[in-house]
Amino acid sequence: MLEMTLHYGESPLHIRDISKAQDIPARFLEQILLQIKRAGYLRSRKGPNGGYTLSKPPENISVAEIIRVMDGPLAPIDCVSVTAHEVCPREKSCGLRWLWKKSRDAIAEILESTSFADVAEMTRKARNANQENEKISLPDKDK
Amino acid sequence: MLEMTLHYGESPLHIRDISKAQDIPARFLEQILLQIKRAGYLRSRKGPNGGYTLSKPPENISVAEIIRVMDGPLAPIDCVSVTAHEVCPREKSCGLRWLWKKSRDAIAEILESTSFADVAEMTRKARNANQENEKISLPDKDK
DNA sequence: CGATTGACATAGTAAACTAATAGGAACGTT
DNA sequence: AACGTTCCTATTAGTTTACTATGTCAATCG
Image (cartoon, rainbow over all chains, first blue to last red):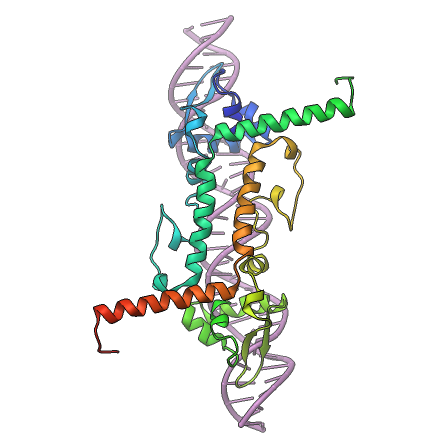
């Protein structure tokens, strides 16, 4: 998703390119992309110049949504899950539940308020900062 | 650990009692307790009136410590783990790493600042509130 | 119009993890 | 010495994770 956000607006990205950029086996990546596509976050085009594209602007896709598609609920335990709540007989008298809920809410807040546009921006910033450093340590001689 | 905190200062708790109170198979619980004991958080006594006790006051045991004993690092991915860091070639240019780190730090902050004394207190509060409610809905007739 | 390229689908597998079970040895109190 | 309980090692069944393998279908370009 990050790779696709970095190339948003350009031509579709091939599985192979994403595979290389992120060191993910192509055949494995294919399945992941399919799953995310079925959930409605990606469009695909077949044939030469085919590939995958985000189906909506990356500003409107939170990391939490994609994690839910791939890994299921954010909660560390079902008794505090919002999307897959399961009742527990001790629910009303368990101090741990309070803690698990606090944890769930904290990470939900982070992952829901972060879009892939945000992640891409952080990536670009980090890469620029990196390049600056390399300019200093290795003056020229581009290889 | 919660059960043991609730009985801190009293006589050692048998595996069977914890097992009943928390609905955990006794044989399975045994292994868990052993593991926590080896890590130094519990003392045990054999024979009649034996059982397990916390080896230090529950105020001084954070939930994070016990999770680390049982489940390993708090981090969602090794590249942002403090206790089991693993380097990644993309480490310096990955916007996702920034997000995983933010997540890790958030839950570490929660779990490290919460002691079992805190969890026990929440449990007691919840149970009292519960009892109040039951007094209202079921006036007397204690069963 | 057909070869190429890539999407789409299903099944299988190896390793790791989770949640246990089994059997007995060691120990401490009575 | 008997009894209750922890302690310890080993084994198992089921699930999940992270892949690999194989094959079919569809779209696009020349």
